[in-house]
Amino acid sequence: MTTLKILLRFIIILISNFTFSQVSESQKINEKNILKIFKSTIDQDKRNRISVTANPWSTESENYLKSDTVKLINPSNKIDENYCHLINWTFYRKNKFIRSYGEYCNEPANEKVTNENDYFELKINETIHGTFLELYNKNKIVENFQIISIEKKQSLSYKNEIQYILTLKRKNKKSGSR
Figure 1 (cartoon, one colour):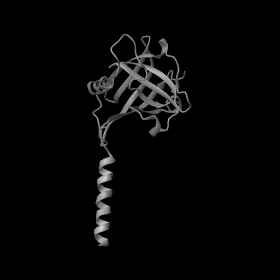
Figure 2 (cartoon, one colour; figure 1 turned 60 degrees about the vertical axis):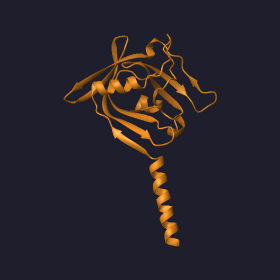
Figure 3 (cartoon, rainbow, N blue to C red; figure 1 turned 135 degrees about the horizontal axis):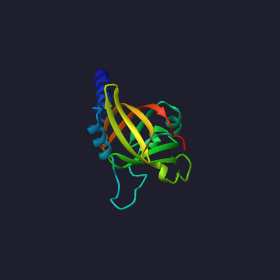
Figure 4 (cartoon, rainbow, N blue to C red; figure 1 turned 90 degrees about the vertical axis):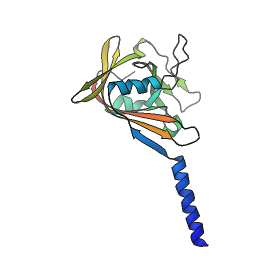
């Protein structure tokens, strides 16, 4: 009887681990695929205004401002990631986004008001040294990243939510501060 109980517990643990785990797969890094992924995350209401809280790619702001390697997550669960101060990239076109700054740990949560310096166009360049993401503001390049990886995770929970994790390595630091 005890072996049967042990076997049943083992089966329950296996089933629960499978049910609540995530399936992860690396995505091909090329211009067409990256732009397709960015486009798939656009969640705007089609009016003539842009909501910066609509499905942003997020990272912890201190990491973004100080580190050479940046991970942007879409959609990010701010509670799971334990982020308080975020930098968000909210796409409104596949190659255009608004960068916003948010503070979510204190009530009420708040976001810095965006201005013309927060609107970016991105260009993707593929070279023999890798694939690079260049950020332009007012037709001037302000940041340049090498795309290290893009990962797609699909939760097997009841929501069946897809999450992307984009890992970038900064190539220069012309801006990045507020």
